[in-house]
Length: 376
Image (cartoon, rainbow, N blue to C red):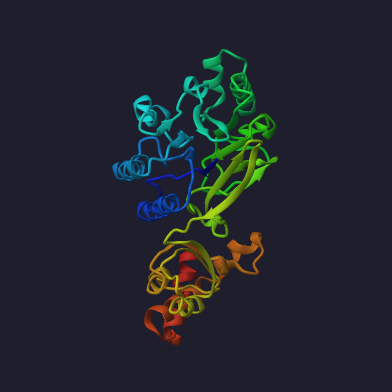
């Protein structure tokens, strides 16, 4: 059997007040094209289908279109669980009826213990979905003394493994933070102080573990315990990450292989550093000037309307930093240096605004004014 492991779609997400829905639509189309061209038996989504529990209408419509094409036209089953961004009850509405059409939503603990079974010529594969949970939910439902995320996952895995069929291959779908894995800036913390970490040891009885929550593709503990990573980049900290999905292959012995399949969004997330003139010159010939950018200006003088000048060549500059203003200055001396350089900063501003230097009379006048203001 072969299936696609994906997670963290975050449909409807905005980044610096820019909607990413059009980019998400194009990436979902790439998934459909892959399914059309390659034989796979299922598509798994390990949580965070939407970016928030009450998603925008456009995000729901996009998901509806995707499901209609994959389950309806291509007859490929989709198996998904809610993540910490999803509203489990909303996502699971009508799940029993939808299962008959190939959309399997495992959104509560009762459904967790009833696996989705897919039969192949080499045996049965059972998909267990562990919806996102926290210690309070597990403690309340199972009436057990659970105080941490690790305790909760240990108990849930024990509940699932007690239902194993020894003749079947068992796949777990979970949305959690495995201890020691690498995180990104765009992930919402599950708790404070590290109590959200879960040991990979609880997952070892399974033949494959399809994880969601962390946005960087990675394995943890064993080759078959994996994060597929997010559908696309959702923060500048992810600029060097390879986004995509994981093609998982199982055989009669269990896990056989996991292969990363690249997905590419129309806009990359990039960080550019340099002085303003250098960046503007670079932007005039940059073939990817439409990317979403964080720009770090290294100029040590004040600049008038830097964002406007940058967007003339890089229209999607979303965030601007100016570390160059404090280059070479000890942190404890920064405030004092800024206070001493107010006249110099105004001189820079005047040059930018008027394209000429202050006259001697103007320079003396502004120096006297700043001195008077500082004495008040």
